[in-house]
Image 1 (cartoon, rainbow, N blue to C red):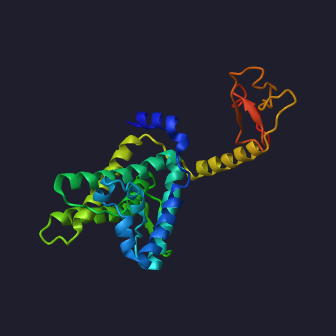
Image 2 (cartoon, rainbow, N blue to C red; image 1 turned 90 degrees about the vertical axis):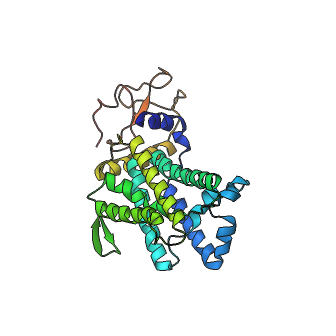
Image 3 (cartoon, helix red, strand yellow; image 1 turned 120 degrees about the vertical axis):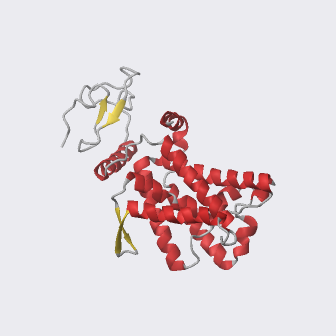
Amino acid sequence: MNNWLNKLEKKIGRFAIPNLINYIVILYALGYVIVMLNPMIYFQYLCLDPVAIMHGQIWRIITFLAFPPSTNIFLCALLLYVDYLIGRQLEAVLGTFRFNVFVIQGILLHAIAAVVVYVLTGMPVVMDSQYIIMSMFFLFAALFPEAQFMLYFAIPIKGKWIAWIDAIYFGYAIVSYFLPFGNGGSANAALAAAVSVINVLIFFMSARNTNPYSPKEMKRKREYKKKMERAQRSTHVYENGAKHKCAVCGRTELDDPSLEFRYCSKCNGNYEYCQDHLFTHTHVK
């Protein structure tokens, strides 16, 4: 299953949205303001309402994310901060495209589930996005089970423990719907929790061969990206009209159109090398 994800990334990976978690947090913040001013605005125009979606209000597939995780401003800010940290870390480890796939797949599964349940039962299930975001902890714990968080900036807790707490929370949301003393409205939470777990399983099976980068490797990649950006800004055209030139052999793309050129992340400076010398040159320190 990992092959189809690799192929998809090659075809449409350039359309991935960098720093997607930033936009989600901003949407949450706007949603908090809306809910505090008038919560009916959210439920009338923004929530994941399958009836409204089937009548053309497709923007709800995205705007339902705006419902804040808490109406307490301090707790909401803390939760958004944690979501931001987890999201940035997952994007750094999985890559922008795959993190996009995880989030967007979860959003679409929620929308599809809401419409299917309505069509089959006539029951309009209205879900928010808290389980999509919370499901990121499952993915993070699978990649970094020993990573430690400071809960409330004071209590140390490992990623795998958070995943277990998450699992209990998700399990209760699902099981309570089938219990005789289940609380009202639990069908929404049960469906959202179940769909989010399915999303994690689908993504994990699809990307199970993805090797997470170590913190050292992640730092090296960030430095390489910055160096590439600086190099692109300072790119100049050589006297013969070439844009690329190997620092070892001096060949350009005009000498051989099939040559590929890359900047070396280990050289001190913007040194470009052809494919024959990229891994054989002496690094400039």
